[in-house]
Amino acid sequence: MAPEAPALSKENEMLDTCLSRRRFLQTTTLAIGGLGMGACRLDEPAPAPLRILILGGTGFVGPNQVRSALARGHEVTLFNRGITNPDLFPDLETLIGDRDGDLAALEGRTWDVVIDNSANLPRWVRMSTEVLRGSVGKYLFVSSTGVYIPYLTTDIREDAPVDTIDDPETEVVNGRTFGALKALAEEEARTTFPDTHLVLRPTYIIGPGDPTDRYTYWPVRLARGGEVLAPGSPGDPMQHVDVRDLAAFMIRAAEDNLTGTYNVVGPREPLTMGGLLERTRAAVGSDATLTWVNAGFLQEHGLSALTYWTEPADDYLGMMQVNGDKAFDAGFAMRPLEETARDTLEWFNAQDAERQELRSGLTPEREAELLAAYR
Image (cartoon, rainbow, N blue to C red):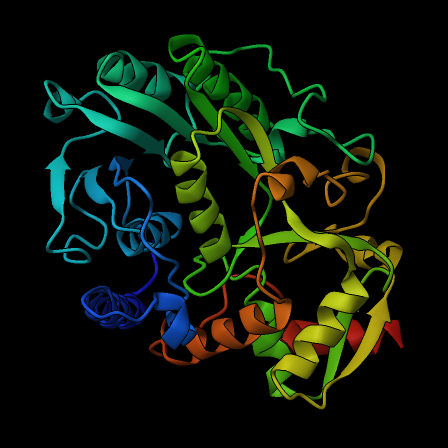
């Protein structure tokens, strides 16, 4: 599900302002860095503009890729069904089609890079790589650290074993098949583009516009104040990536002609559940109190996970302990958690009443019930 229109319109307005300012600066003798871009977060234009094809582009990750690419001076074409947020980027060329068999609009065209955001099925990647073979210079496939399920070790690096599945042709995507299907989809990209593929494996993606509310729950709940149920132990490891930082890295990776496979996880310094909640609480100016409820009690009451926290044990031991050094060494950078917290809360508060029904976490009634039982 895609972010709602009000937030997207605001992002587009900011982009227009930033791009106008950059064009102004380019016509003066002042360097862009001299005046500073403030909230625009724009770097100087890329050394050489790229022609970028984005499969999708109007959901959650895609719009941030578009904004990053346009801010760097690239030419962007979208390919999608024209259903989700069709008016989001009215000035961009949009080719209408369907990943599931209708790829005719891609034929006879050339691009420097294609970014494949939307494929969970290997068959979809197989079809798109075959159509684009010889038409694009690089195939960037967005995978997931879910390929490492079950996470039986810690410090998981890119060469760690990935999940497998008995029926590689299944098209049922669920918790059991997701990681294995993503791993098979990666192989489709590697097979057709053996020397020019780039596979990025992000962990949980958070930030403004997140349709899952997995992180959004925390700044919203903490801002409300009162006694907050905190799951597990304060020392439990946590990882995530802000969607804007992920998108910026993807565009820079294409510019830098990176190839191979990269885990995109953060922050680089270890983050714990306690640190995540304390820093988020401070960022949103909350006076909420935290009551830590252990994993055993939560499991007894039907909660094996809460938002994107899961007890770091058994099959989930290393889920939040994936090694991201390779991406950081290649230029990936993350903004402070505090900025993500404030921006996410601001975005959420701007949504209509229907969208402010949180899609993750606990209802106030369920939280109160669990806290009462725990006491």
